[in-house]
Length: 80
Image 1 (cartoon, rainbow, N blue to C red):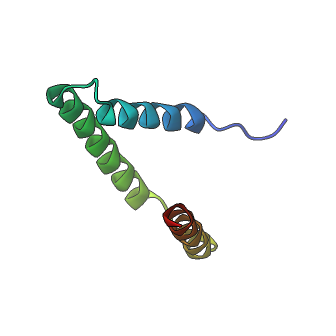
Image 2: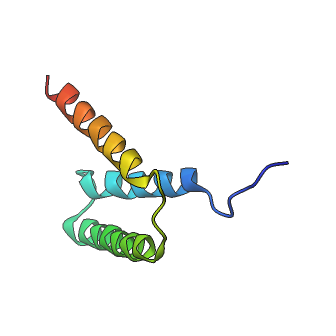
């Protein structure tokens, strides 16, 4: 039996995407949408603080560059 993480990233991603969907839905009023967007900002700040507390790893910079390249390719592909 291998190592198991003590969290569920799939559920976290699902919740963030659900929040973003609710914010952009034409059925959601501005008051509710703004509250949900505030939640996303709070989550962003929590993640930034958590990343600052984490150590740097030898392959981290290379991995980040590759992920940025993939993101740029996705953006450019959707513009075509």
